[in-house]
Amino acid sequence: MSDSGVKVLDAVVVGTGMAGLYMIKRLNDRGLNIQAIEAGSGVGGAWYWNRYPGCRADLPIIEYSYSFSKELEQEWDWSEVMAGQPEIERYLNHTADRFDLRKHIKFDTKVTDAIYNEDSNTWTVKTDQGDTYTCKYCIMATGCLNEPNYPGFKNADSFKGDIYHTAQWPREGVDLTGKRVAIVGCGSSGVQTIPELAKQAKELIAFQRSPVFTFPARNAPMNPKFLAQAKVDYSDIRERQRNSEMGVANYSGPRRPKDSNKPKKPRPSKKILDLTPEQRKQEVKDFGINALSAYVDPYFNPEANEIACDLYRETLKDILDDPQKAEALSPKNYPLHCKRPVIDTEYYSAFNQDNVSIVDLRVNPVEEVTPTGLRTNDAEYEFDVLVYATGFDAMTGTLKKLNIRGRDNQLLADRWKDGPRMYMGLQTVGFPNFFTTTGPGSPSVVSNVLHSIEQHVEWIDTCIDYLLENNIKTIEPTIEAEDAWVIHVDKAAKGSMMTAPTCNSWYLGSNIAGKPQGFMPYIAGTKTYREECDEVVAKGYEGFALTS
Image (cartoon, rainbow, N blue to C red; front, side, top):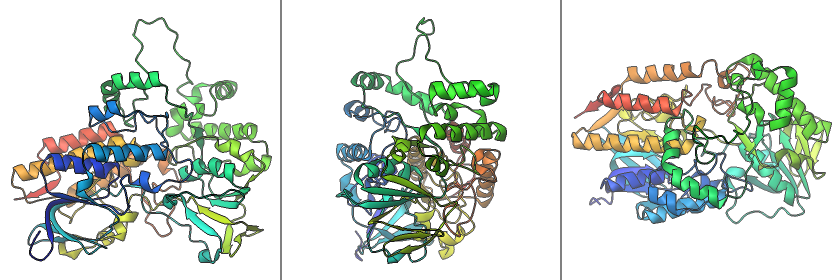
């Protein structure tokens, strides 16, 4: 602490979700003097804030868990294949306690300013609680899905009933028994929460503009024998994740010996175009709608994709009892794999309940919010509770809201006014010693996010160690390297369904009015990306300017 009351540190970490917790541990193990700042009252990040009914992991939890500690892997027992929010939050609290991380965290505190001082090569970080810190390294672990998005309906404040957002669900929960409930949005949070709300509400009206392609999660209680075997196989699981471009091992138990005579479980074909129309329908009948997510050619081939889309819509007609609901829930005018994959638990069966209805906003858009509900262009709907499941200002929303200023007092939001520009999703030109975990231009949200988080945290930690060991004062990208990386990220996305002309998604910023359009994550894969990061380091931090 300086005489002025300013706390002098080596590093400030903003956020204590999965990235922040691991970042604290790495820097603490290295002996650095650090402070973590957290807006919430507890750790967990997205798993602290997103406590809406039905919230759960969209990957098997065996793979969506920390790999940095063998002891942690062995001591934690998961209760479900796809663990729910409460269990994941308990796991992250256990992690914080096990490694004594809370002593470095200040809760219920928001960062307001992060300003670079060129004379001292330090960052000054201020909070809404009146704290001031100076540090060599400023690390943003604020997550990709953090800043809630509201749709901006006309007269939004006029509604007299209760209003909730899935990303800011009350910690104490909400009792909807006997209530008339409306929910707007059908991304991951909407798909997960609708079946749970349908169990409570007297009436549930879903207002959906862009229905999603969603596939059954097939969640189940964790089999103790499977968990015990996974604990034996963890090292193999992690190695398989590292060799996967999605950071996913697709672990299903111990590997079968090559000479095993045990018959293999049948799987869908690899390419939908290799099948006749009759064979395609039969595979969907045999394997369920999940078969359509297993074919590889719809990811890049428009013809294959349209065939898969047609089959999906036809399957909905068989699943849903009401033709109006089947039509309203059918994704149209954009390709399969354009948006983030969504998995569900009893999503479509919820719409077969008599108390659940759907309004297709493609046909009848919302005109305004009223004191008692919503008015579309052809009807008025009354209800007691309004739930927004409208997602986030993804990847850049939180960072652009903060007063982050680099060299020459440049505001980060201004530098990113035409879209985020970063080198490898780690740093941006003009902001020395300023790092982001899973930032724009890295695989992050198009991969197993925790796998990508660990890789980024380890890279940043190793980089800081290199700087300290070699008495290097600052690191930041060169403009040439940053420009080349932006082009590289854009080129990698070309030809995929995620950048198809008819695709509008939060990957592109399409869900936020006025947000610059551009594909933000890096789609080439986690294995490829890690090798590129390692090569940069092997070449003496190629593409970065280092000053002594």
